[in-house]
Amino acid sequence: MDLMLVGIGGLLGGLSRFQLGQILSRKASPAFPAGTFLINMTGAFLLGVLAGSDPSRQLYLLLGDGFLGAFTTFSTFMYEGFHLFEGRRTLNAAVYVVSSLVLGVLGFMLGYGIAWILF
Image (cartoon, rainbow, N blue to C red; front, top):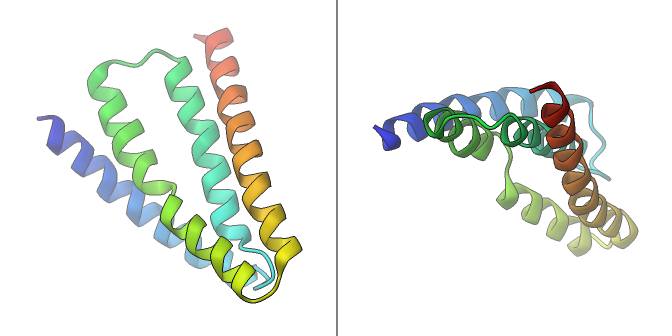
């Protein structure tokens, strides 16, 4: 049952990321991967909300490990960060990598805090 929950969530999360990424990439500059950045920040915040709401194990498997695990993407983050460095956009790469990490943690904490207050 656990594998099914993670699989269903992962399928929906991956498809959502793909669709949203397609929409955002049409409007993004190649100088900064805003689509992946926005998706990952949203996912970090939503994971904080989920964790802070003290969900059941099954709900966490479906939404946390499954949906948000597939919705956010560390591999694409690494690829795009490396690609910026490789293309000699060093400042953009540094801003992307550092802001993704710092704002991702802050977004998680904000989501967790909001959920803790509300739930």
